[in-house]
Image 1: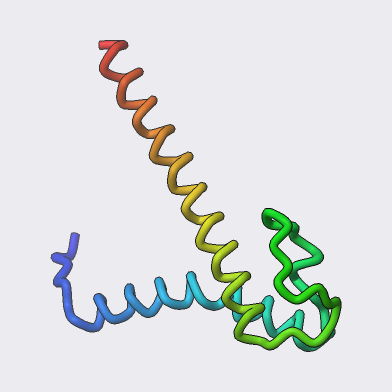
Image 2: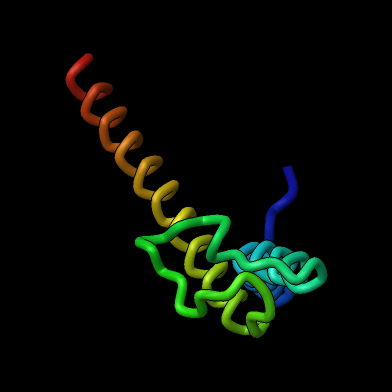
Length: 97
């Protein structure tokens, strides 16, 4: 097996991948909403948070920030579920020995 050397280009690729993972889905969804002139606040009701009370004509950056908030919240919830499952598995594995 080859020895792996941690080069700076590898770190750059990892950070770039992380940036693409967090920002690309909200950017593409914002572009979709802007292209079809839709309101994302009426699709996903988030604590009745609709600051515009309009169905059309919302600025792109506000749509992007709202979708980014939802995307990060979804990722945070998924992380918490996986972290809790790993803790339960660890306790179960120790108890089983």
